[in-house]
Amino acid sequence: MFYLDLYPDDPPGYHALSTSAEWTAWLISAVPAGIDGEVRRRLVSNLKHILVGLEMKAGLIVPHGERVSGKSVLFEPYCQIMTFEFSVGMFSACEGLGSIHHLAGIGDDGSTGARVNPNDWIAALTREFDGTGAAHLEVNVRRVKEVRDKIHQDRLGARANIDWHDFGYAEAFIPSRDALQPLLRKHLDAVPDRTNLLLR
Picture (cartoon, rainbow, N blue to C red):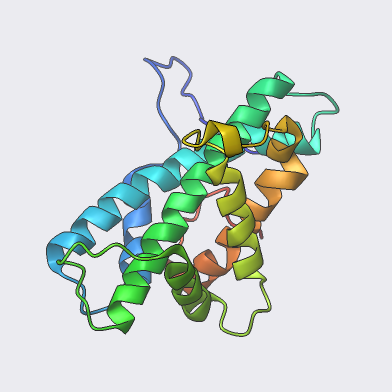
């Protein structure tokens, strides 16, 4: 069972078990050398908060999806929206790390603010974190992107109706969580001990 929080005997209020600061070491390890200091600082700051958000969502999605208590934990439509949010956060983490590795690979320190094409950052992410292809990172990230792209409502005449089953546990959450595994394992010693995002 995953827990969002542990409370003292007389809790003064809500507090999270995980903190964003615990992700700093892993993110510093995951960002390549040669990146502009301010760009590195902003990326680490942005992604550490996203990762804590993913932990909190996983803390509810997994017990619901696995039915660990024998019953549902969440109202099903709420779980689908939470799974969608997990995919959006995971997309952002992959995009940030993939983009910074692509830029480092072409000798750009990130300070130019260049936009990186999705195919380029996905390729760079895959080279860095799943060079052999054994973890199926590219397939999983592209699935995460498909789920995330459903948020776009810019071409209504060309957009299909959203099938809410696409936001289900197996369809959306599992590929997102699986995409995260090779990223975490690349710098395993810096992963927070208490995270529920790493499959052990």
